[in-house]
Image (cartoon, helix red, strand yellow):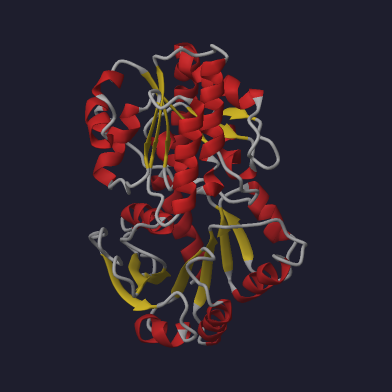
Length: 385
């Protein structure tokens, strides 16, 4: 019989956060590994643990993102655990000195340290090198999602083992109802029979949604698509008030207010995601980022079989390997390219294109299913203890 291993995840959990969603979806499958004891140390925030209740996983809030005493806050909870697994993104651990002190403290106590890096940048410049060296020196295992991220960590100083595990995809997802999705989004009823493209997720300037809207309007102006073609942007813009106003200005200037629908006040709960996905005939993901991370949104669309076009940027490498339609973007992501316009026109006007991409991206979703990803994590834990 395998030894029972105790793992304490340090992460957001049960909150409106992409990292929290990632961990929750992983734990749903990881809890099936019977020789693991799983706990989550969540931050002390109003929405912690609001939307997560996974049988077999214990959780409690006990630390703060900016606290200089991270190790002290975690110690009473994790002192009896074999492995500390940090889900790291810079916005979670804002006091970097406290973060590295915690790693050093727990390692000196014989704890094994696993870190999943959700943001990875190229290695070798003043901005990223020292952080990468330190994290590789203090961890036992670093998990990354993409080959490019693995390459960046491979050149850094430190002895941590770098393991590449894909970002997971939900498997056996129930198909949503288009009518329910459109109703939930408050999209005009007259759009029901139209071809609808969409962008779903957090709304902010880094997502380059403005360029996608400009490309859609340009496709209309060039008569590559007709006025029965519609586009929906839905998600939560949070406090990005300036960007909200900018998107509205783009729509107003384009004259396409009858073809573009913006809903920027939604954090879509899990039970509604399937219906929102069913409302889209295709989707576009764009970005201004050059980091080497993986896109969780790619896997959401793959799980629901939504034909997808993505910008040729590193964060969408997985999507491109999975069969998403690529489009070229300008260096600054503010200039519309014909490649972007053509992608929208093809997905709008060609059912055959949508069918082929849907098939490819669904196969990609099965290859990266959480069932497989959880087993890879369990293997990492067993190799450490």
